[in-house]
Amino acid sequence: MRSFLVVGGGIVGYSVALALQARGRSVVIVDDAPSVPAASWGNAGHIAVEQVEPLASPATLRGVPKRLLAKDDALSLPLRDVRHWLPFGMRLAAAARPDRFRAGKAALSPLIGGAMGAWERLVQGVGQPDLLIQDGHFVIWDTPVSAARGLTAWQAADTGTTRFRPIDADEREWLTRLLGRAPAGAIRFTGSGHIASHDLLFTALRRHFVERGGVMVTGRAVGLPVTDGKTAVALSDGRVLTADGVVVAAGVASKPLLEGIGHKVPMIAERGYHLHADVGHWPTDLPPLVFEDRALIVTRFRDYLRASSFVEFSHPDSPPDPAKWERLRGRIRDLGLPFPLPAREWVGCRPTLPDYLPAIGRSDRAANLFYAFGHQHLGLTLGPVTGERIAALVTDQGPDLSAFDLNRFAGT
Image 1 (cartoon, rainbow, N blue to C red):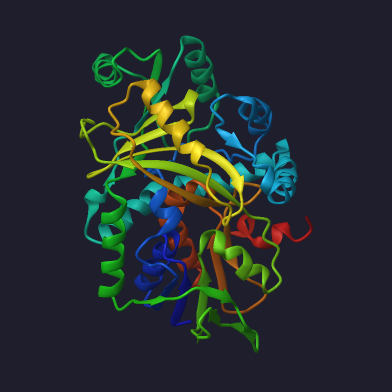
Image 2: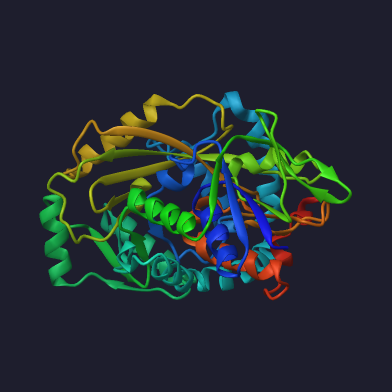
């Protein structure tokens, strides 16, 4: 296969496209809003290589009642969307059984383990290594009790290639100046990282893609018509695009495309909310801060600040909940953070499958069809390594991806 259509212009789509170009393929990216990558642009920018364990776990299930009843509403199951989250939740409960959790972790670990190296290759490849900042992150707790409990949980967790330690005296002073008080407890991770800027990153990816002969097509993919065992991409305006190969990497929009040709895709829109502000007086070189008791992460990027929170199991077309932005502002005020408010509001959809593993593989519905989506909270983290895996799969040189095959849902 020499020519490819990649459906989706987020971090996964661009990573796939650039990896295919590196193997000598000609590539067209199809996206309905190529200038605004939705979920890929809206995240906290954290390269979360410490998150080796799938969120479909016994610990997650045990924590659901507490999170639902918590006053901060960190987890939300809107009644209006019960027909979407109830069947998803039942599949999640099944995927969180100890045996399936262990299998999921075994599948996810090598992918996470290769993520930072893939990021290094990506930013080096586009000529801007400074877009990746590898300075770790802090985890902060509100009280001594929650600090002791949180530290115990992290000590029991597999954090992959990262390490953590108690903060030192200089870091405690750093955080004390920011918070106006000493943190009740905090640890510093090393080995993780974040991107310098979403805008600069996507500008660099687009520029490099086009400079290498890539073509951008603006349009909304609505179908994957199959003829003689091969698929094309049908757009909402009536155009039908063809190529030797097709890769669907369209986040939540991948579900109707793949289900349209017979795949089962039990994916939900796991929505997150953020506030986006000017940098104000936030320290320039402060790594991301995770306020674990408040389900809040604040990241200083090159030219802006972002505070992200909430897990809302919903539907992509459901209206946002304005109260969540107000609660997010309340958390920022309660912590005394120098985060300029009211700030700009954003809501977006994480494409999440019930076992919290992505879908990466080759379709058995069409000989030329591949897919890469469903990365939930790890889309930014796993974008580059997923691109490399798809490019290797195209040339039959890749590792075993059977754990991420969509057919794992065929009998559920």
